[in-house]
Length: 173
Length: 444
Image (cartoon, rainbow over all chains, first blue to last red; front, side, top):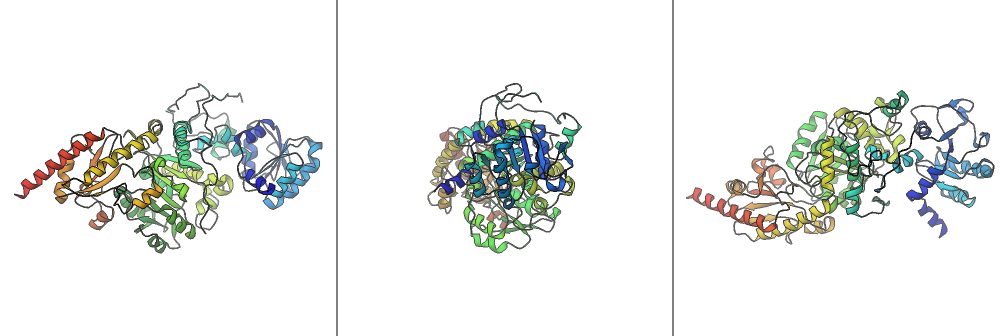
């Protein structure tokens, strides 16, 4: 069954798939970004900015203000610039609508990736996005995955599942 | 309904021996150092004030102060977490501090932990006496019948605690049955896996939620370093009930941050570092972390030889005329043989007890008469070790507690090392003969 296969595929992602996305993406629209400094979305946005990504916050309640130096927009289509990835920081039942909005403007904005946060999953929406040619990640946090795949998560005593004797290049930042 | 556990491949697809050498230890990127450096430093320089603030707010990964995290200790933590199939690990100064750290995110004053009567004697004392000072109540039950555990659970119970393979009794816990009872009660099952190590048994694969270690024993392996570890499976949902406010409710010391909401399946290990190690302070020294990591690199080889030697010694002792009984789960007539085959199929470990004919006096004489065995209070060394628990490690216990823990008067505990097994047998043989002679003379 193709549906079952799709669901299993989204249970776990190969490191190379996630690295390909994280290394290829430069600009991220974060739907559900919070101006409140102790919310998880603020943590993730700040971390991704520090790693060199541009993160554009999307949150109707904070539209017109700035979050971490970036103007906040009410919806994806309001963002004037192009962006590579949509990071959905909303409950699972809100994800489908955001995915459909993103599919509608994907060609126009250059969207290549739909990423749903830890705890957010909508298999039907994922299928629609993949049918439209987008890459999908669900139930993961890009901050945690970036940290895991770049050996930073290991600093907190976590199992990165990364085994390698290659010497990583240290970038200047 | 029983949980489905760890569907995800915890190992990244690599075998145990590969992971015991490589997990947590990629080459150091700045210098290329192949072995993990000993980061003998207390503190770490910030890029700027914003970076410092991000670190203190737990918004980014990194190091602040070695009471909380240290790169050498972190490498060991990842290795232990990986070998156990867990999400993360917190290493600490000793096995005893690991037990406090493991319970700390779960317990409030007045709460209870249901623990096995077969726990190592030092643990019985810590749980039964010292924990009372925190307002934590240990309810001891005979875990041989899991129904006893079910009956001991009250609404105040926050955890169930046992050893996979108990010290010194050689008792094996039915982890799968206990995990089901813990799940029904909505509390985590904590398993002390010190004597088994992840080479012989991985409790998380049987449904345990948290695994604790005295790394002092087989993980470091050479008797060099005292240390402990707490491994979290990442599988327990701390928001499934209102029993665990430290993890599910706002944390005042971090401006109302909710650990589960912010860190997901990393919440328990984050809390153990950011609150547990921060405020209780039982930090593992980087040097000890380094030595323990070196020990783990040969874990599979050592544990298999430990088990093979122990099986030989136990079989030989069980035929010895001066030995009353031998209690080792690797022997065919042992009541735990079935559980051993299920949970520790590669071997029953290296620690067991035997009863010397002649009781307390004879037990004392044996430990004083050995020459190659070391008479000391430790287990899990490359060297063979021997002890008379009733007069040493289990001295603080009552007679009933000693019997329950398998540490009666005549009991001698051995931890079989990696020496030539025939030499170990010869040493025990001469000691048993000497002891029998002295007891006979005393009787005349």
